[in-house]
Image (cartoon, rainbow, N blue to C red; front, top):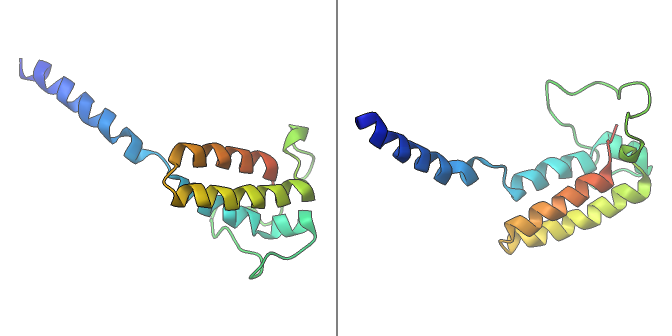
Length: 119
C-alpha cells in the first residue's frame, strides 16, 4: 500500500525537476561561444577571434581535426556561416538576458546550424 502511494509522489518530483536538469541557454551560449572563438573557427574565417583563440580545455579534444570530409556536407563550416553564427549568438545573449529561454534555445539551434562542424 505504501509503495502505491509513494510512486505517484516520486514521479511528480521527477517531473517537477525535469526542467532543472536541462541545459540552460546561458550554458549553451558559453559552450558555443568557446567554439566560435576557437582555433578551428580562426582557421575557417581567416581572422583571429578577439582575445585570441580559446581552447576547449577538454581531455577528449583532438589535437587536430579528423581527416576526410564530414559525412554531411551541410555541416561544413564557412566563413559566412561562422560570422552569421556570431551575429545570432549576440541575439541569443539578449534573449537570455530578457528571460526568453525557449526563444533563446531556438536561436541557439540556428547558431549551431550556421557554425557547422568547426575543425
